[in-house]
View 1 (cartoon, helix red, strand yellow):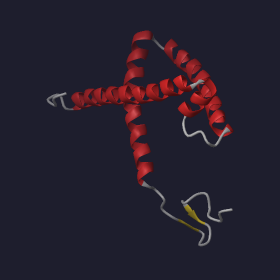
View 2: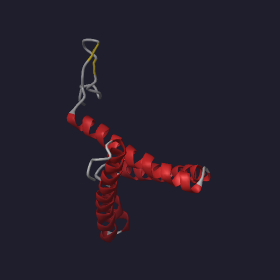
View 3: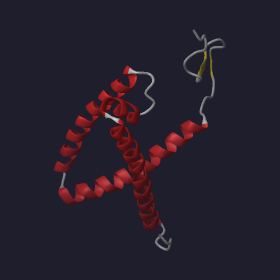
View 4: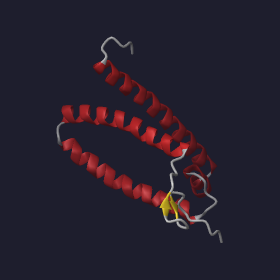
Length: 133
């Protein structure tokens, strides 16, 4: 068994905090910030067109997706050889499902990145109207 503490943020021997922010943490913070840009812009426009009833729909879909993601997490933990969702899809449904899920995941991130860039240019255009999109 490894005697190292699970978290690199604390130093148990000396009783002091230790800085443990790494490059991957900064990247995840940046990704979260960029995703929020498009999310607020898209949901704000949809709510202004459809009205506040759309918030109820968002809550229902979020509730369902919460349980789907929990179930997928349980599947990932059921076999520690799984490295991604496409791994357990390939094993449980077939290789075609793993291929489809893997490429769909990649495609969704590409589309998300493009949508986020469009949202960012819209925000920049609001603050700097002379900025070319």
